Length: 129
Image (cartoon, rainbow, N blue to C red; front, side, top):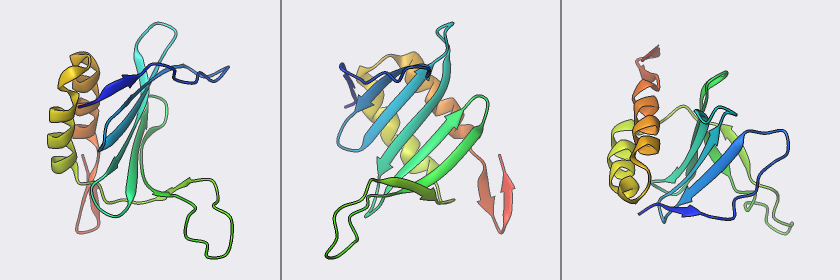
């Protein structure tokens, strides 16, 4: 079950953020000065690699794999970075998120779910909503 991380770092000049976490997800939600959700990042791990789906009202969607910076034999770990990855297991992520989000504000989960449903899918090289 997702729980809210109470001491979430706020970045000066950025929108207010809230962070929710559990063993499968990290969900960061950004709020405009008027209190509306203006962006979110849903990090999830359904296999050997962590993925991140990000949405901002002014930029739209991106889907990435998290390169954790660990795969550097004989060298220090590097800072994790996001690298493009078009595969998004929408149905599976939605099902897991619905179950994980039962203990947090339903309006947040509903908003994120509605945006995930809008994420374009790829079929035979064609992108469609």
